[in-house]
Structure formats: C-alpha cells, structure tokens
Image 1 (cartoon, rainbow, N blue to C red):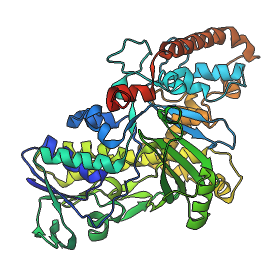
Image 2 (image 1 turned 180 degrees about the vertical axis):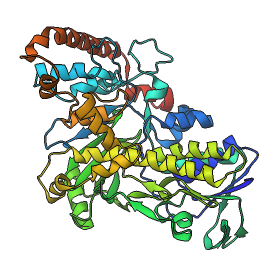
Image 3 (image 1 turned 90 degrees about the vertical axis):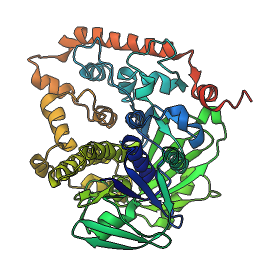
Image 4 (image 1 turned 120 degrees about the horizontal axis):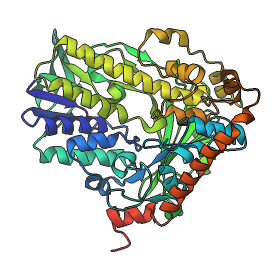
Length: 516
C-alpha cells in the first residue's frame, strides 16, 4: 500500500494523515479536503491517553499548546448526574494510589460505613494524588520539580483542553513539513470496483486513485457508510443523547475560572459541558430531541447560561458504530467510524486508539482479510466497552424530575445477552459489585460508580460475607487504615500548596503573557 488517501481535513483526518506520514515516510500520503465542507470543531476536551499518541508521533505539548489555545486537564467533574444537588464528584486522570491499604479501594468503603456522612467526592481525593492539584487549582511538572505527590506523572496524567479547529490546522502544517500532500478539492463522484473504491473523481484534479482510502468525513461517512453501504449499529439503546448546542464564552475572572478539569452538569434533558481553554471557555448542551425540541433545548441552554447574546452552533450526533471499519480498501477513522457522545471527552479517543491499531496492521506491508477482521474486532470491542462506560453515568442515576430522566430509569439494557460477548463494562460491573465486592484498580468505573452511590462494598455485603455479629468488631482495624489514608491526603495537599496556579503555570511555561 504505497499510496494512501485520507479523505477529510478535520481533527481525525489531520491526525490520521500526520500519523501515517510520520510513521511511514516512504509512503505517499495524500490528505484530500474540501473547504466547502465545514468540520465539526467542537471536540475540545481529551483524555490522558492522547499523550501516548503524541509521544508516538513525536509531538511535545509545548509544540502545539500555544497555537491551539490549549490548557492542561487533570480530571472530569460530574454534577447532578446521581440526583439534583448531589454535590458532584471527580474522575481524575492517573493511576490510583492504593499503598498502605489493607483492602485496596475497600478501605474507603469501610470509612463510608463508619462515617456515613463522608461525601462521595472524598473517594477520588483519597486515592488520586492529582486531586490535590485539582482542588487547589494548581499545576506542576513532576519531571522538573521535586514535589512528592505520590504516583502523579505530569507527562502521563494530564490531558488537554484545546481548540479542535486550531489543532487540525497545526497538524496540517506539521504534515506539510514532513512532505505530506494536501489537496483542496471537492469529490463529485466515487467509482467502485470489486476491491472497494476504484477512484475518487474530483472537480479540479480529476481521478484520484490509491491503494487505501481512509474515510475521515465525519458523520457523513462518505466512503464506508454511503458508498460501501456498511451497516451502522446504533447505540441508542444504551445512550440517550443525539443532539447538542455549543457556544463560546469569554472569561470574567480568568485566574479563577481557568481550572484543570472539564465540568459536566446534568440538567433537564441531558447535560452541559464547560471546557476552559486559555483565552475562553467552550460550553455546550448535549440532549435528546426525543424529549425536547431543538428550539426549546436552545432556550433551556440559554436559561442555564443566563446568556442569550452568544453565537450558538447545533450538532446532530449519530450514536453508534459501523459493523466493520476496515472493508475492502476503505478504513474509517473518527466520526466516520462511530461516535459515542461528548461525555468523558471521548471524541478524539477513538481516533488515536484506532490509529495505533491501523498502524500495526499496515506495518506488515500486506493486509489480508484476516488482519482486517482482527482490526475490526479489536476496534468494535473497545468502542463498545467505552460506550458502556459512558452509559453507566446515566444508568446509575436516580433522577426522575423530567420525562427524560424517568425514561432513563425505565430503560432496558438486555444485560443477559452481554454474556455472549467479550469485553462488556456492564458485565464487569456485575462481577465487581456482586461477586468480587471490589472494583478493578485502574478502571474509571470505580470513580463513576462510587460517585453514583454504587459502591462495590457496603455494610450488607460485609455482614453477609463476614462471620461477625456486629461490624463494629472490625472498626479498630479499619480505623488504622482510614487514619493512614487521611494522613496521605493531607500530605498530598500540603505538597501542592506552594505550586503555581494553573494560570501562572501556563503563563510561565507556555504563553508568557505577563512577561511581555
């Protein structure tokens, strides 16, 4: 496969084209984009895994942040998903620290049993060192500053908030620097043959042929879905939202409002995100048009923001994934392959996760049907697993204040059928909750489930499982462990007190505004 055409110039197309040219410099990689087709441009929040992709392609954070209005992200906060006025909780990045515990995460559940008024937000504070930074709105580079913050690793535990459109433009420049080819043209016709796509007929450049076509055309899925007619598997059975309104807001108090986390607040018919970039905030309302009209959703969003003087952009989302992603000589990446919904900042996650799988397939030189099937199975399994992870944010809610939330309470998930599949988050929750009485140590589900009052251990499980007449017999043992957890939490908080604020850290290391 010496010639590869990447169709689409958004974030997915630019990430794909740059990755392939960077890792396969001997191949001719062509990115074909049309100025007449607007990109989505609202994927402004990432997860920490994007650092693995950045490392793979040799991009440092300082290379792109200033050009993309970027800031660092350490966590995702959820408000009112469990119930209105629930106080909120965090899902921080990084690995949890379970050192000096007697039963891993269960030590905190012991604390909750002994002290029922302990807020669920304390779970993340107890196990994730990054929360000391989040709670104080601080930041530091663990490779440059000798501050003892447990397992915190600046390179691995930070994600980003950035302008997705500017990020794509940055990657286009990088792509040109390594002699990638960019063609700006419109596809007017697509011819197929038994191998898949024969050629793309463009208005200015005529016929464009390639050994492999990468579909990065967004929800249109022009090659995989529209041309090859690959079936689409909807996830509307587990995920409720299919629409969104998005806008941008200027800071009133930047030093206070620029925080190292994405904030997600559940409201009447979905949830509102707030993504703080360096010079402004991105915000949006993800909702279901089955329960509210687009116009009423916009009114609801404006009421929530207490603003009606902003420019709003609407997005209709296609939730689910195509049955196969690599079909004949076409492979889809990004929205053209599938989409879960904006919750958990997963929009770019599937891009770089699918890309590394594709790179490993292409590295063999020749691609057989077997390797395509392996690629498809891996991608669809991991995609489904993350979709179920997103779904538990809704499934564990107890809200019934609107028809939208009442319908979520009554939704049927057909869990029994999942035991026929491999890699089910729902299935894992059954084991962790009802059999193992402990969540997997590195799964984000531990934070989400605990924040939604679905702890793996509770007093009833312990009374049933332990031959004790009274749980208070265990209190002396538990108290010792709880004391250790509290000491560690205080140590983390003390260690970060003198760190720079996020604003000052970015100003010093990236933007240098106050030094001008």
